[in-house]
Length: 540
Image (cartoon, rainbow, N blue to C red; front, side):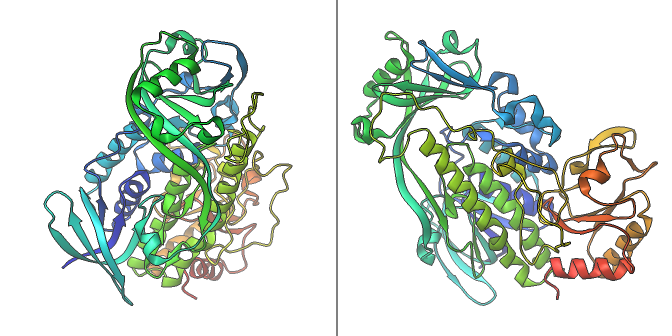
């Protein structure tokens, strides 16, 4: 029987990212994926800045950007009657605008999933700790007190292998067999609209090159359609939403019929089109009642299905496993108590619910739901659509793995769009530019590998305490002093944004979220820091 600390089921972006994150923490894993290779369809395309921060910390950001499109080739969102016809509206989404660089050192990225997955797979295979088996599926499993016993089968040879894993990450998609076998209840609205994705080869540059956009929405009497930019030249996605409202059925989308509708939406009757693939699908807005099931953890679409309006599905899944991986590593290494793993549900389920609800609201505003009758009028999108900086950066966790400092959350007019950087415990550690070793770097560049203690100009005692406590607890903690000669606050923003005085300190968890904050110097720094770590790691 093969033994492995973590078995990952599903080799899409979520499973591949889980493999990378665990390897970076020295945890062996086995990933099984039923398909022979990475996806052949573009599927998800938008990677938001928070997810790109994670990939930056993993060391794979540059490779993803190289595989994707530069920002200037997909900076707009455009609504038209037909692609070649009247333009109704164009927007520059907040996430693509210059203002986005004030809250993150990285920009979002448009990289289609069929280009992203090979990059992640290659990177995961080079990490050393993660084994990846494609053409392999898990066909049975059973949980025991200390192990999950699974049977995996090679889909080519039929050979079966028994695997014993301490933990399982179920990243096996919206049709998750693990979720079904566990009997997990899903809350929300299923089958809210039906769609068809058509992958095409066509040169659309005469109608797109002067207005490079990620999305070209077509409001036509015969369809509500979208041209999705993939390479910006001759490879595009073509999407028709709410099929039934327009009298279409997925079964009628032959290559010839698809080609006809592409030409109608483009407004170019003689357009040269080659149909490369046709994929029907149905959007749902549902979230698992529980993400944690003994030693099995749901992640990505297995935990939440959401409409793609806003591009949050892939991003939410990657951020799920970013939250989970450090906790699994801490428990497996014996530096945290097992109950730490329960905080995965406490933190990610509320986030998944909010994001799913808002993705559904985007779809409603755009007239995509199945119950909406065909309307020849123009429906664009609510102002929040693609301007969800509050949702991208403002998630704030509340769980036993967060030590409250008694401060209140910032009040914003619209939590979907508005983001106020804050180091209040439970929130993402804010981005602030610093000068370190002669280079301009972000506070976020110190994060991602373990706990990090950031201390103010008069907080040397915190740094000394952290080094001593780290040795006592066998827990690596990076200590950074924000002071002259170390990490210099050249713009004078750090203390104000992080909300502490010169003697205060902030403890950031391995996932980049603030676990504890001392607004000033504590009476007994070692006692305060030990207590905070013990709380976060479920050691009390």
